[in-house]
Image (cartoon, rainbow, N blue to C red):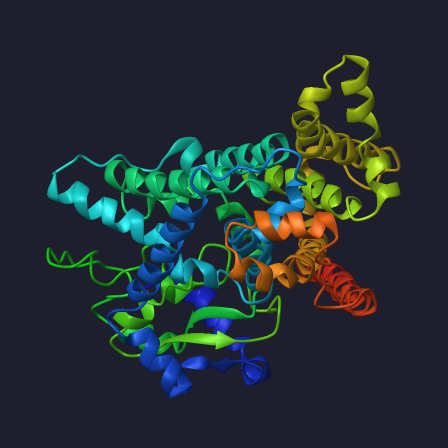
Length: 460
């Protein structure tokens, strides 16, 4: 049952629906979608299919390195493993999470591996560790994210099929092991390297799981959307939210994985899958971000700005002036990738945010620099996620043009050599530069609008 405060907050949310509800559409009203989400084999069947595809990519990429003398990026574009993972899946994942929310979590194969690990652990009667401390707070997730981005910069992880295959193998094994050792949903809540990206970017997503009528939730005695029932023959426990959320009270997209388990379990059929406007006014706004989320946004700001500057020779040279000077001064050219990664992910963001905070404090605009960091992080992520959308668009249009070549020869080396020698011409991007410019301008305009709007809603 609802507590007094929870009931009051939920009824306040009910009163605000009014005309706003008219701008929301329950996708469960579409029979095909409802049938799919209520299907017992969903999402496990889709997760299994994606897992098999990943295993196939691991086999194709295992032991395959960039040939000597071959351009790394060109080879990656013509190799099916690097092309699909880094040139197609990753950009599309960024777009889906910003526009729709955490829909990738719904079908993520790593969540399935975590469940399998949990099932094996229960069979073996392994005592489960709880998610607490730095794991629960998100600092482990942020550390893993930074480590992977540093590996990308230092080793060219996204350009080498063997490294990509090893990376995917480690993720699958890691998800399985955390399921063995930790409590249910441990990987998604405490160890997924992109969980904080999903948490931050999904807040304005247009898909949302929300309860319908507060009265139906009050009258419901079973609360099967919350309580879990152990089923020894099943892969997981029946009913209940895998993320340990309270579905009737959802007021944000940040933690909901859109897994539809609460929709399946809700006996009154009161849970809904809504399609609505971005950054719904009914969602709860937090005053300050957690330190884990704040640090992620700071790291992400350096990463995204570095990626955008990389598109033009002049901006890339200006952005990398400091690390290149240091590498040359100490004759560390062999470690230039690592140096650039440290600059992009840690030093530049710290300087950017510190100087911005000092400047605002000096004119009396803020009282505390660190409090400003935490309050500004929510709006800053709107700008940086929009820039990430633009970078993802650029990469997708450029890399996906190589897909016909990669499908004809999955290894990629023959096509890469042919392009280098002039026998083949490098394919044109799917969108020309003018189309990309128009789309990018539109993205930035929307981002600016929501940036200003969120400031107003946050203050009110």
